[in-house]
Length: 109
Image (tube, rainbow, N blue to C red):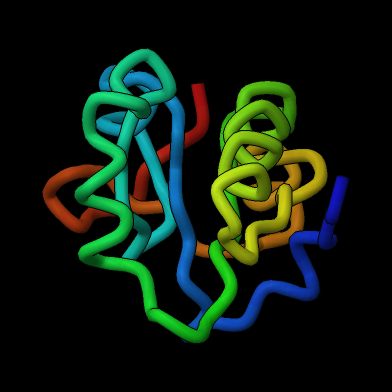
């Protein structure tokens, strides 16, 4: 499965967060699209509308397990998708910004 390190994700890369609502509300990467894995197939159209047509989708969750499942699904659909290794835990540990729903500093559950 295609995987990238948190440090390889650039600020303008398209990021899809597949964690559940409570995790997202506590803290997420600014600018990420949020579609929980539990709703992903039903809401797939939201991704196709938001994602760049010729760009890569970087999929992230808490530690990398759920995002790996979504990455495999997207690859089967012909989408250029990669799993962000280590997820939001590594994202925060690497000093990358984490915000809550109000745009204030957040944290990873």
